[in-house]
Length: 353
Image (tube, rainbow, N blue to C red):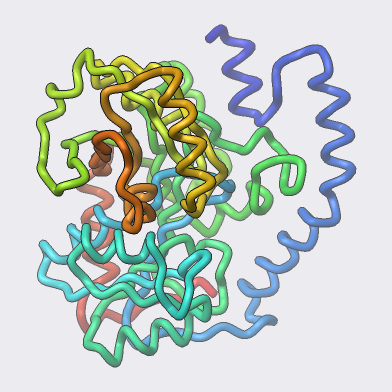
C-alpha cells in the first residue's frame, strides 16, 4: 500500500476516480443521521437524556462500525482477565435475533467464557438480573451505542481492515455514529492488526490519538488456537494443512475469516458467504451442498458463531470450526490494569453517562 492509499484509508476516503464526488454525495445524504447520533450522545453525556447506573461496575466492549470487529473474542478475553483477578463477572448481551430470551451467540459466549450470560435488549433490566445473580462486574457486549446503562469503562474496537467504515455513517457507510464518539472511549483496541502493513498501523494509531487523546491504544490479533469437528474432537492446526476445504460463514467480516483459514495452510476450493447473523435452514444447507457437489471439498470449515446454528443439521461432510482467541499484542499490561482498576470491589466509580 503506497503512502497516498494509506492516507486515504486512514482518513476514511475511498480510492478511485469517483471518490471525491461520491464522498460529497454520501455525506450530504447521511448528514441527518449523523447529526442525530451526535446530538444523542451529547444529550446523554450532558445528562439531558436519562441513564441509570448498575449496582456493579460496567465494562463495555463495542465499536463504531457495523460488521465484525472481534467483539466476541474480546469479551471472552476481558472476562478471562476478570476471572483471573478474582472478580465474578457476567456478560450482558442484547441477543440479536434471540427467541424467548435465548440466542445462539449468547450460548456460544456462555460455553467459551464459563460465566452467566444475560440476554435482554433492555440493558438496565439485564444488569439488574445479573447483579441479583451475584455478579460483581458486568461486561456489556456490543454496547457502545446503548447509553441508557451507564458504564465505567468503554473498550472500543477498530478493525484494521476497515477502520472507519469507508468514512460515512449509515446507510451509505458502515459508521454507526460520527468519529467524535471516540472521545468517550477509555481504551481503543485495533483488531486484526497483523492483517495490514506496519505503516498502516502506525498511521492509524496517530489518527486515533488525534481523535481520542484520552484513550489508551492497544493492538489486538485474532489468533487461531485450534479446530474442533462436529463430534467435538479437537484437531491441531497442522491437520488442516493442504486439505481441500469449503469455507462457509455468515458473519460481519468474512474476508478476515477466509484470510485466517488461508493462513493455516488449507486449500480452499470454494466459498459460501452469507449475510451477517445468517440463520441456517434447509435452503441454506442445500446451497452449501450445491457448491460442494462442484468443488468436492474434504471438509467444511466455518466459524464458531456459525457452527452453533447448525445443531439440528447433520451435513454430508465433516464440519470443522476454527477456534479463535483475542491476543493483545501491544499494551496488554496497561489494558489489564485498567480493567482491574475498574472492577475493584468498593471502588468509587466515575460514570460517563
